[in-house]
Amino acid sequence: MISPENNDRLTRVERGAPMGRMLRENFWFPFALSEAVVAGAPPERVRLLGENFVTFRAEDGRVALLDEACPHRRASLLLARVEGCALRCIFHGWKIDVSGQVAEVPSEGERAETWGKNVKVNHYPVFENGGLLWAWLGKGEPRDRPELPFFDLAPESLWISRTVARCNWFQGIEGTLDSVHVQTLHDSWIRPYAGKSGETIGRSFDHPPRYEIEETTYGLRAAAIRELDDENKYYRVTEYIAPFVALTPGKSDTAASVFIAVPVDDTHHLLFWGHYNRTGPVRHGVNKLAGLAAPGLEYDINNFANIQLDADQRWGQDRQAMSAGHYSGFPRCIVDEDIVVQQSMGPITDRTNERLCSSDVAIVRARWLMLGYLDRFERDETVPHSGMARPIDIVAPSGFDWRSPDALPVPVPA
Image 1 (tube, rainbow, N blue to C red):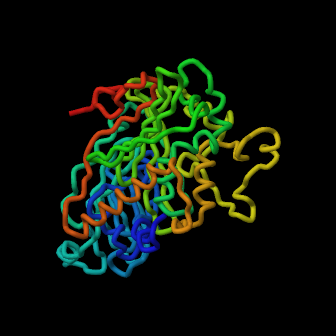
Image 2 (image 1 turned 90 degrees about the horizontal axis):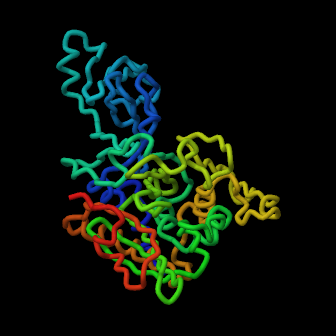
């Protein structure tokens, strides 16, 4: 159980809330799919921490992230014309280039150039990697860019999607750290792998897990350990790279799934969900969702799990599919199940009324980890932000030390 005060401190990010300030001043924010921001296309809205921005890609490939409001009279730059490497506000023709400089002020005539140089435009550093665009929203010099195992991969080795979820960002984080729900909520997607040679994830159905948690320089490692026989155990280790990223093991030693929950505002978050393989193409080749979605599923990669219905329509649950044998009644895709249950908890779930059990230890530790980061920030102490993680999915002898660097399936970069 958590107090109302700590529930607010953990979840609220708008209007100068402490968590929003801490996140802003310490971490890079993924804000869009790289492929969704196209040179020459209209600017796109980005909403983070309850504030509105626009992004666009210049003709030379650079990406800008600016405040949505034009610095002149606050008209929305979503309406702006894209002119080469700049946006031109349609209200009075002010032109703002991709570097955040006011390049033209038509109304000022001969003094337009010097006038423009003195106008402040809130422009945010951006980099691209892992199929995503990342922004630094803080006031000072950006901290080091994150190190993530799905960075610098060939296009065929990474598939990633975007969803807007109608609930608080930390509900998304907790959903990923909750390993035990795999064997219930995702029954219809996971059970076909049970008993197949080499498909360790099917062993999620064999026994309830025992959890062990390790804090790291970058967040948490959460090991769900299941007894198999007198000699072997099934180790499934999820990595939480605070504050936004969680990695769950995939179907090979170098493959994994990535979940990134980013706060849009107090009651919405972006979910970036995908798969990667560090040593080859994503396992499923052309159909990167095989076994995780209905065959032939058509989808918008930039709006993947678009769950718009609410409790009055049971969030779109298909009871006929349940009667026909589908466990959850969401037969479209595995991630729909996660989004629906998170949204069903409410825009900000009331954690003061929870009744937690032993399988929730990773969730509890993640909450206290982030509240601890917030305490450090408020004491002007350094907030941790570095490290490289690798999830583990392995059957090993009972003496296997999952905490050891030697236990990782691939080397950790220096």
